[in-house]
Image (cartoon, rainbow, N blue to C red; front, side):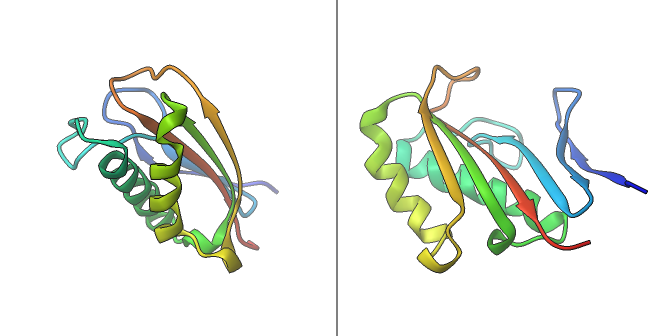
Amino acid sequence: MSVIIRHGTHPRLPVSNAVEANGWLYVTGQVPRDAEGNLLAGNMTEQARLTLSNLKQVIESANYTTKDIVRIGVWIDDPRDFPEFNSVFADFFDIEHAPARVTIQSSMMCDCKVEVDAIAYKAP
């Protein structure tokens, strides 16, 4: 029998921060929002660090770790920022536990430079 667990809610939208089902954790796209919900108006390095910190916080609040992440989706608005993003990404994921990743150039739905979602797995 399948059990679905919703972890946290989005402050402004009818979505969960993450949804868990049969060991799989699907994390909603994270953007560089501070604890008060304000978007960080910084450079890519600053925004990537906050975005990945937010992602890590959601993962850990569901009792997973970054080592459990199997896939990451990254949307950046300017491909010239890719090297900066990669540099920050390497601080969060080592080669041994690197998830599969797709990176896409995209216009953002909010005024930020990056959005990241993830899928994690651990045996139920």
